[in-house]
Amino acid sequence: MNFLTGLLIRLATTAFAFWLATLFIPGITLGTDSIGEAVLTLLLVAVIFGVVNGVLQPVIKTLGCGFYLLTLGLIAIVVNGLLFLLTSWIAGQLDLPFSVDGFWPSAVLGALFVSVVTWVLGMVTNRD
Image 1 (tube, helix red, strand yellow):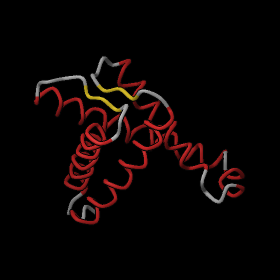
Image 2: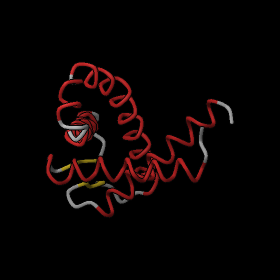
Image 3: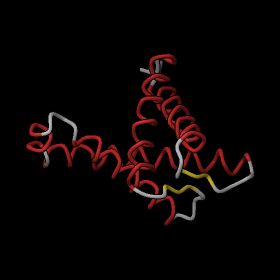
Image 4: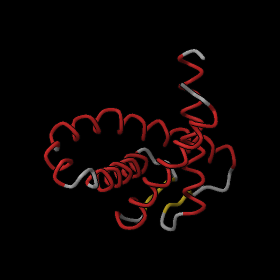
């Protein structure tokens, strides 16, 4: 599978995971009734999430290495929840109809849910 195809599959699976999160996690909402606008919003939110994770996650892990060791990696749940909340804030700044109500439980559970769903879909689609 070439790079572009793998990237598009990752984007689609992440957008699908976000859509499922809006259905199952209370406090995560997609404020549109139009299917086309919903798909576009989910794709853009998936891009934002990927950029936020790609840029900030390595910096946070490097700077917070001691916290990761001290908490045996459990701080990653908090970090992922905060990055999920940041994604929602950026989407709001771009006037996208996607929102997360707060850190607990919406952002934390949303981040866990999206991570698990994208991991499972990645295994099924063999995107790498």
